[in-house]
Image (cartoon, rainbow, N blue to C red; front, side):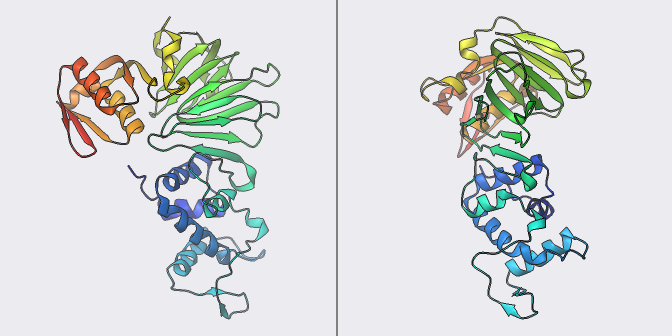
Length: 342
């Protein structure tokens, strides 16, 4: 399953160093999922510098992008600066003030996917995974993060300097090196999940719901804009989901912690499982799509709104689909990279 090409204006912002961490992550996933994207971004990098104005000129991203695309497509020659066309330099030199994202240099070197992506000005490192990919990121303080498929982790440049905050879009398992002098927190969809000596997972895949599962220790969850007010305390074995207002819509106590994040801790694929607690059928099927890179639909659509609690194997799509179908009382209809439950 490929990630679609980002729009031109987003690519222009990335090249100019004006993209946000979230926007850069979109480009990261596109390149990770599409081998031909590396070559395209390398070509754009090689021609972008000619659109950079002098210090006295006003910077125009749209103008630079238009000229970049024209040169990339062979419409305009690359100028030497003297007004005479010249061949494209093998090692283009970009104006220092532009601070083009180091992520572009990584693209040119073919280093992408889950690997670190440094944004313009060294503002953050972004890690991204694609369908079926599970990766471990070691943070500078000794903490580790295991990322689930189709997830993005952003680590600000200031990480570890008095505070430790990371941003998550997707799902990840956190094993935190506790340090009371430098609090650790995960920011996800408007919530802050604060570590209190913990192993936990955070899931942020919808616009208004964040899931938190605590495996060891405890965490405190609150809206990110409340400065720690109205925190909800969770301990090992708790599974919770939060929506607008910082009120947990679901808290299950005493879940078996060994199974809560088997997808992150299993030593081999044969024993890895996905433990889903009171989730919508549609969300369970979306999880299978992320893990196996296939399309799964359910008919009728209203069945997708039902909730289930189920543990699915991650070493066999057929077994996982059969388990869900059996629970729902439906049949699996198999096609080429598309499955329907009805």
